[in-house]
Length: 267
Image (cartoon, rainbow, N blue to C red; front, side):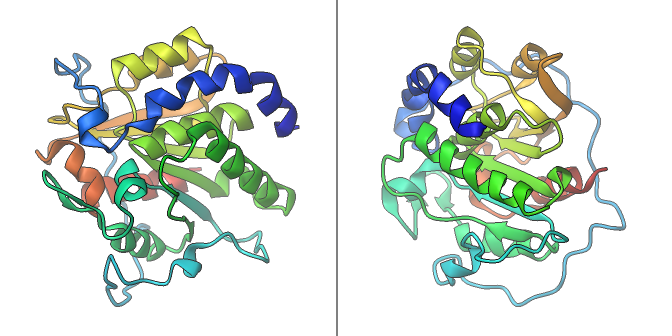
């Protein structure tokens, strides 16, 4: 079914490749000239059930990437979390280091998410990955999990910057109202307007997270409103005050890890 959706919309979706291709590449992203006017939504805070398993910390540059590959056998009782990284890793590989934000701690992010009991799925995308084509790949993998008996509520797709743009396409292609999505620094006015013009709606349970000082991304509230009544079920937005702007994506900060885990576990 999702292949039919892909073929029907591929001409429309291809228009967005340029709009998400520059995410996390500081030189090519669109700067937001003003602070979003929306007020901060209700805080999502840690709960007693969100306790990570204490495991040894691993280097962000030296880790076994096969640990995060799509599994050959699927345990339908597990919770699955896809992590879609930012574009700087496409551009530089691992390690990826920004002059503004330092190293993108990819391995540490995956390791920390895994400590909460998720089966974490992630891979290093090749340079200049076509976001639409990659969204189709993730859509196929999610469909494989669903067909194997994994409940939709036990699947979460987390995207950072360009990864958030890809996650938006996955949401639209799947048209599933129960899957969870976390869009980290994934919205800016130009991108949201492109989605609106081309009738790209969000489906499922969608959480937006961004830092109040981020000059490259802002609120997803307009996209939420546009998707309301179409396929979006539960949605919220967390505005952080870390102060590093887009740099929050580069580190496994509790400020975004905790609401992400809670969002994935909400009934």
